[in-house]
Length: 448
Image (cartoon, rainbow, N blue to C red):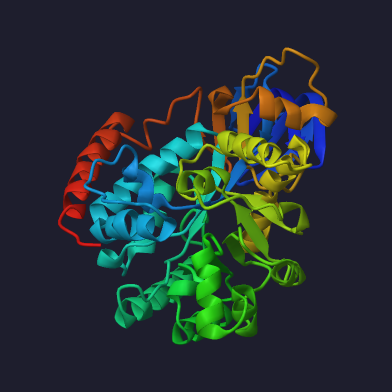
């Protein structure tokens, strides 16, 4: 058991603050939250003194690309990238083909370590790597579990390198989903990982692929995780080749359900947004990525029933992503306030609830013990009504001190437990630098 004492307990949406709280954790759940909660007499356990600091539910990144973890500062010979499609062809699609098992595992480790340091306790990943498809999701899962991070992943099905790759991608999704479910049924493993059925984007998934994906969703009971309308090309491709809006095309296949993650959606029509809302699916907004790729701004965010936030591979710091989402919205003339985006950030926990089948995102009895302890010396009153304002204009990931995930301490006083990393965390980063350099060199041998 773990007791967190002397906490300023804070929750995002609906906002709530309680002073002087003790939080008792048993196994992977919160057992009690009160001013008097204590370790039972004679019960072995660990006490963490929050010292009056903030204690809040873990933050979720609802869309990421861990395979891009070794792209930071990339020095490969990229070539011209005057538009989004050329950026995909000359950079990302060459990089994912250069990925091997070693670089994937290194990327998974460093991204997970970075996430935990930033108070991100769950990451929903979207993987691509044509050179090592089979078993790639299990490799990512093992990296998450070594760090103790919660998450989910899927393989990005596409026909951009041929039909065989598309078929192998579908199979990897199904095999991994079955493996995760078997572990859950058998009670083996830490229970930190889930699965989606992944696809790149409608423009690289032909009708055969869409039919196979729809069958995989039905067969496994998982949700689809796919990019849509990130660029106008995706929209035009659907109209030219299929004579319909791309969300209509997906929905006609029966593939969209309440576990689905529709990513970007910058150029969706109001009718398409209505379909997403009717299916109770989530749209994941990635502000920094959209800005970096110059694809435009999604002005339809207020129309969405279920909006969540992700990074699309630009790191794992959701404090930063939250700020960019809000400030870009204001720069684009939007009417939302920080609280609206804090609700979107909190929606990541709703995604977890639908996938893991248990409650997340509150400091209450029975909720999953994914918890962050942080140091924030508020210069002005901190009350429920202005939590979002403090997030937007004051708090950052540097405030994170200790992180508990699934009832296990994965970061304590800004240090990772030695028992998890007997080799030392610096050795992991040193190997990642070596693997990243080798991957960049392989990219230079791959034609667009």
